[in-house]
Image (cartoon, rainbow, N blue to C red; front, side, top):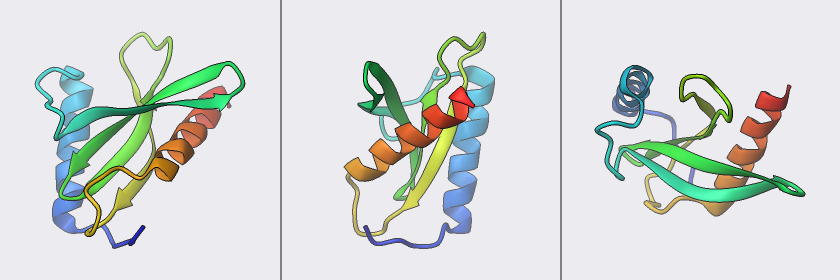
Length: 105
């Protein structure tokens, strides 16, 4: 994938989406802002659903912390790609494994 630096506008957009999620959960989001990307097997018998905050060709991938009292997003990878609107399958797989490892400690 073609990698770019995160612009100020991209940072602001993703930050606003994460702040809104922290205050209101998934309420009011549409698929262009927050969406389920894919269910990924992180090890035999264990799957994680990967979600992404999206804005200005930038994505913050992560998973929802299973068993948390309040719905909690664990971000693991941020990608910026000016040439690709479609999510990168390899990045989704990597995001799931990194976030799952962080939760498991």
